[in-house]
Amino acid sequence: MPRPRVLSRFRHVRCWVPADLTEVTRVGNEEDPAAGGVTQDDIDAIWTATKRLFRRGLHPLVTVCVRRNGHLLMNRSLGWSHGAGPDSPPTAPRTIATPETPICMFSASKAITAMVVHLLDEDGVLHVDDRVADYIPEFGCNGKDRVTLRHVLTHRAGIPTTGGRGDLALLTDWDAIVALLCEAEPRSRPGQTLSYHALTGGFILGEVVRRVTGKDVRTVLAERILAPLGVARLNYGVPPADVPLVAENHFTGIPVFPPFTGVARFVLGMSFEDAAEISNEPTFLTSIVPSGNVVGTAEEMSRFLQMLLDGGVWGGRRIFEARTVHRATQQSSFRELDLSLLLPLRYGIGFMLGGRHVSPFGPNTQAAFGHLGLMNIHCWADRWRNTSVAVVTTGKPLVSDHLPALHGLLSTITDRMPRVA
Image (cartoon, rainbow, N blue to C red; front, side):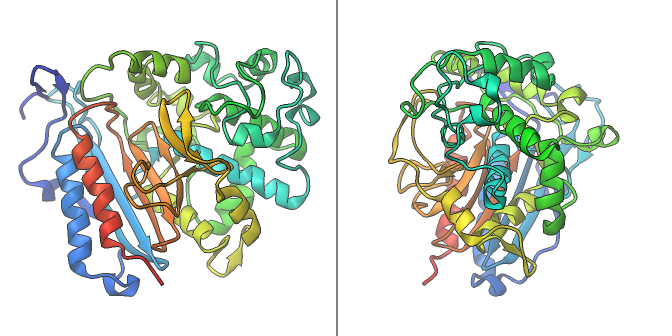
């Protein structure tokens, strides 16, 4: 088997791609496209776009799940879970992935953490407009006494960074990072500036959950949301015995260059390359990182989003009140420049929102809500099209020549899932 390729003057670090993709294609349970109001041609077009993205050699694994009108129309994987990274030895054993292979969702975890908080608001044990200091008194120092849960959920709490610290030891030491954030000085007035909280907000929300329930956020998520959803995973990390099952992540593409190197350091407290590497560490995969280490499958993420799209109901069982879902996914601000990501974005209360031209979920997705994961995982629900989609990958390029193919895949899903009346 040939060694991984380093091509072009831009030094794109790529994974090996087989000539025959059927060797590494696996198909899970899928329903007749007609049940979802589309045709087989529509499904084939989405899969062709998926293969085009995979052939760029930037992703060892691509999994795609698409639901429409509640019907599971696509549930497929393409590639390997282990042994196929650009730095993997040519003789390394390769494991072909399946749609059941667990994958780290990175920042798509934020949408799930947000819904845990909204559920506790629904219970009446907290309110999203309460101050964080009402539940974590030591947080209310150095000018953070007016920070609310809403500010944290909408990336306006003024604590977007860990101050340059994002090492594995800190991220997996719950008490240490909560203490660090409690002592931090805000970089802006609470509620004033939109600046993406890549890691910090999740720990604050998770600590609030722990203090009002007496349980960690992993347990609350499992008992209140995942059990009625009937999913095996989609929780923070995995049990130690399951670590070998989780697909490996790999940095690919061209080396990150300024100003993106500075953005990564500010937002993540580490380089983009280190973020991909740390995500494979057993310590990370068995800890609770509410903003970044939910592990599950594309189908499970699509199921979670479909439940929200259906007003909080799954399998005839109500998990959320419809008004809770509406509150979480409503627009909290008009499109503006996110000063951390340097992108014009819209946010709900814990969710990224779509748009006509600039959108994490492809064009013409003004009615979509969901979240990105390390710029290469796209999970969303679209009210216009009654679809819930998860495109989950294990390659972590930042700026590379895969972008046209990625845009093509997202656009094809939008084009092939027609708007409902």
